[in-house]
Image (cartoon, rainbow, N blue to C red; front, side, top):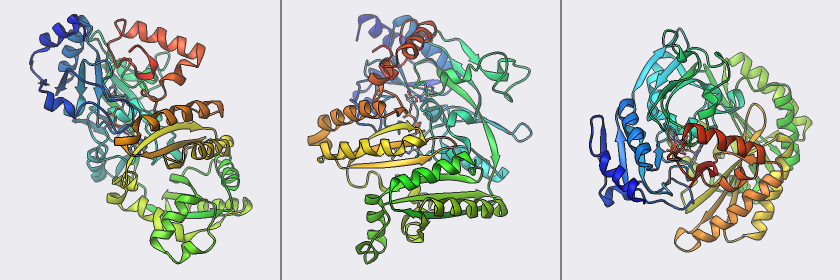
Length: 469
Ligand SMILES: Cc1cc2nc3c(=O)[nH]c(=O)nc-3n(C[C@H](O)[C@H](O)[C@H](O)COP(=O)(O)OP(=O)(O)OC[C@H]3O[C@@H](n4cnc5c(N)ncnc54)[C@H](O)[C@@H]3O)c2cc1C
């Protein structure tokens, strides 16, 4: 670290509203997130409890040119929180108050360190919930989710976490505080995102902390669904599932789907094999589409009927065994769900998430097949999650961190390049997709100009999105 930055750290000292950690033992836990990205080495951790303390930290860090990496629950698989340039990790877990539940406006306002589990529990007595919830709900924070474009539960209806954000309060590198959307007017507060010119809220969504630190978030509320059920369909191959999802999306039969995933033959065999060993010996579908419906029971029944007809036209048949063996439990047993569905039961996992147009689903799977052939030493799983439009596809490579870390990272870097060539785009960008972001010429140029304007000394998360570092 530079002398100026070291001086800056000393200047940080302890001040009201924040705790400062510099003991090397304390710092170990702040080196990385759940990704395979190279860990960083923080010089200090600051854990603020107020937005004013965040202002103070940024002003001091900006004067001293000290890097600042925002950190929520550190459950991301893109290395965004890893302090690759050293400096300060800003642990936002202490900013964890729910500030307002406004049922008339249909909005909840909270601090960024609020965990999903806590927010859902607070909303339940009001018969309310939020639109998008990642499967890491107990540990993941609202600030981390919006800065990393979370998705999952809710994506068929609401697409992405950012689509559920009504406005933000952000602190810029200079320490200036800005409210976006209608809350730019202190008399109006949060109720409308698209007003007063361009959508400045959007600038900070998915930004990995590179453009500002979010200190308050307004989210749309939704009534808790009255009815829930799950269904699974088996298909001979991925092409049938692709056609089925395309038609569901084209006809907008997604209003009562809270989650839908497509599963490959290997997953089907493993799940059926665990639950019903004898059935795993017989023929099984090559692909499955599993759907979690939630909503008004009458409407769910209608949608289910229409979707069953579409599935049948695309060669799909009801596959209740997959539901019984896995999917129903995944979607209804919160402990199982919260355990990340066993992703990490056996080993470390390098995850690369891409946005996939539905008409390129089979192209995405071709990349996964090639990757498996080229790198059999890192067993690869593919996960496909349905959104209102398009899909999100994950490549999950299991590896032994003691002996295979560098090799697995290099293999996933290659996979990232191949996915872009196949028409997919980076998602959950952090550091793992940084090289690809730099490849999108004019887009990359504009991003750099915005960065220079908002963070002229490049102190915010250098290295993330390929900016600075
Ligand atoms: C097994 C497993 C399953 C997962 N399942 C899902 C899933 O279903 N859906 C999904 O979307 N994701 C999933 N994830 C990824 C991750 O858990 C989520 O995206 C989660 O929302 C990230 O929140 P976090 O608080 O942990 O963020 P962090 O990892 O702490 O941070 C993410 C990024 O946001 C930045 N950041 C954090 N807080 C702020 C702030 N206040 N202001 C500015 N920048 C900030 C960080 O610098 C970093 O770049 C999964 C991860 C694992 C390991």
